[in-house]
Length: 489
Ligand code: GLN
Image (cartoon, rainbow, N blue to C red):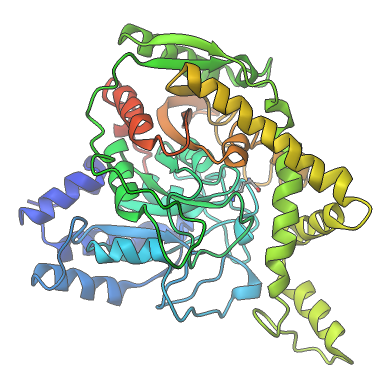
C-alpha cells in the first residue's frame, strides 16, 4: 500500500504502520518529500531534522522503538526545547540557541514512539495572531498563500493543513492554537491550564500558557492529549490529577447533552456571515441529535481583551527579562561602555517590534503607581471572568461559539495596526484567563476572492473536562465532512 497523507488522520496512519501496511520509514519519507516540495512556498518549518527522523523511523521498523505513536511523524512549534537542532521561538534573540534538554511534552511523544520531523514557524515569542512577527520568514496559509495561517502557532497549523506532518504541537496563551486551527481547517485543542507540562516550553505569560495539539481529527487530538497530559515533577504548575484512561475514547456518547450559547459571543455585526451561519448550523445539528440548548450568561466577557493584554504583557515583561545577552540570548557585537549598555543594546537588537511593545506595556502596567490601577485591577476582573464560566458550566456541558470573527486575513492587512490584531483574540482569550479547555473544529469553508477559506467553530469546556468536551466535538465531526476538506497545494 502506498501512503496518501491527505486521506488519513494520525491514528489511521499509526494503525497502518502498526499492521505493517506502511513502514515508518516510508511514512517519514513521504512527509519529508512533501516538506521538500512545499515548504519553500509555505514557510511552515524553520528547521527539518531529516536524518534524525529517518533514523528513528528505521528504529521503529526494526522494532527497537515501540509505543502508541510508533512511527508517526509530528511537527513541533519552535518554542519547545529539543536537545537536537535549534530552539529559536522565532526570535533573533535565540537565533543560535541549542537546548541541552527536551521539553516534557515532546519527550512524552517520543517516548510513545513518535518521529519528530522538525520545528515550525511562529510569531516571535508567541506574541501575535498572524505568524508575521517571526525573525525569519513567516508561515503562509495553505488555502491561500496571500493570507496568514493565524498565530502564533501558524507554522504548526499550516504544516497540519498541508499534510506536511500527521499532527503538530503548539502553544496557546490567548488563542494561539485555536485561532490558527480555525483559519487553516484543522482541529486545535487548548487543554486546561495545568494539564500538560510546560517544562522546556519557552515562556510567554506563565499564568496563561498551555501546550496542545493540532490534528486532523478529534481522536488524534485526544490521543495526543492523553499521551502528553499528567503531572510532571519538572513543572510545579501541572495538576496532580490522574489522567483518565478513557480520555481518548471520543466515540463514547455524552448523556443528556446540554450545549450552552452565550449572547456575549454573538457580537453584533462583528461576525462574518459565514462564521455566524456555521455556529447557527452547529446549534441546529446538536439539537437534532438530542441536545438541549441553554442560554448562558457570561457578563464579563467584554473585559477579556483588555484584561488579557495587561496580564499577558505584565508576565511577558518579567519572563523576557532573562534575555539580556549575558544570561541568555543574543549579545551585541557593538562596543559598549558598561553592563547596562550591553543589556540594552543586546535587547534592542535581539527583540522585534511587537515583543518590545509588549515588554513596554507590561513594564508600565507593573510599575509603581500603576500596579494597582492596571495589574491588580486586571486580576480582579480575571476572577470574575472565571466565575462567569464556573456558573455557566453548572448549566451546560460545553459552550458553543465562533473561534474567530472571520476567515483568514491578508498578509500585511493588520500588521501596522496592533489594536485590530489584538481584537482578533476576542473569542479565545477568556478561556486562557479562566484556565478552562477549548477546542476549535473545522466547520467548512467560505469563498473569499475566488478561494475557499476554512472557518472554525469553538467548543469551550470546564477545567479538566476534556474527555467530555472531545466527545461533544467528535459528535459534530462525525456528522460533517469538514475534516476531509484539503487545500490544493
Ligand atoms: N494572539 C495572542 C497574542 O498575541 C495570543 C498569542 C498566544 O496565544 N500565544 O498574545
